[in-house]
Length: 258
Figure (cartoon, rainbow, N blue to C red):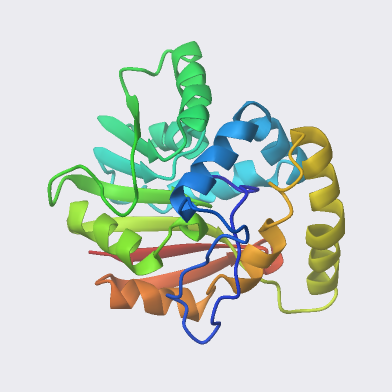
């Protein structure tokens, strides 16, 4: 998914970045189903909220992520947790043969398909409903993979990243956009105030969801950013991982090579 995506939080073990972030709600359904239902419920307001709550900065972040792939010029690109397909659409700047977007939420995919059809991009982008932990493609299929603000929604970081590794060709590049935590004053203080006070209020007001935008601050807090996440990439097989902070550390671009 994209930037201000709702995710479920739990009391993660911060010493173990692979620990599963579990749903806060008691339910007979698993995290994946709860995530799917929540995204479905806000899908029609999702794009507006993304751009409104990020003040439009998210567009620049996606462009920087796609620029990481310019040198390799991938022809077959996988966009995991594609949401409404903004990052998949941005990837067309690379002139690939095809971009395949996969997401759990049919509601989000429906919005993405509408945008793609409107822009007459159906011959370049295909959106499929699917699970990051069970990618229904053979080994060594894609030349590159992007994930825009969706890794936090993986039920298991290691399993999801291992599946991405499997379907990438040898030498292919993974590019992950994800929130990180600013470390320096005053950005850290302003960031925490915005995430804990401003964003949940406007997210609830516009999305009409009482919970969707409440979970983001804690999910970011518990996400293993920086070196902790590059260590996850190493554990799942990726070589020469990098972490590049953007906008004073609010967001980071992570890369790894199969």
